[in-house]
Amino acid sequence: MKELTEELRSHLKEEGYLEIREIPGRGVCAIRNFMYTWGLCIGIDETGYYGRYCYESPYEAFAALSVWDGKDDPQLNWIRYKGYGGERWHYCQKIPYEWKIQKTNQ
Image (tube, rainbow, N blue to C red; front, side, top):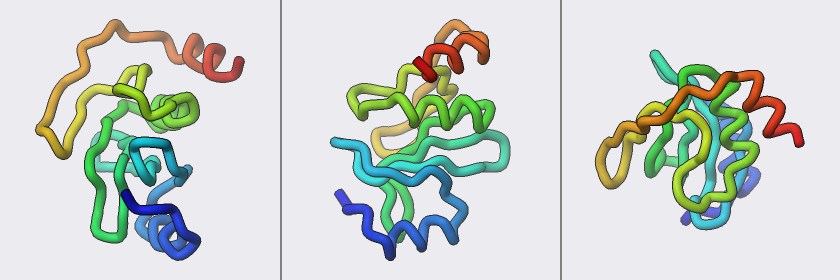
């Protein structure tokens, strides 16, 4: 996987990526706004990304990225995964936003 250099970070910022960081086993990850959702993108390089987890709001995407260790899928309310390995839906009970903020700030 691609390492996060200052050159890559600068390029990704120009492309609209936010909260850019490396996560072990997932490579360069960041948040990006899409037409109808916010994406937690994984395996990012200059040409694109390996996959993304779609969220309803930027708050959910940022919260998920802030606590994710890269193992398995992110634990918060992602809606759908798109990318390498196909697409899949995440069927989970909706967790109130206030609860997620309290849990991620502990």
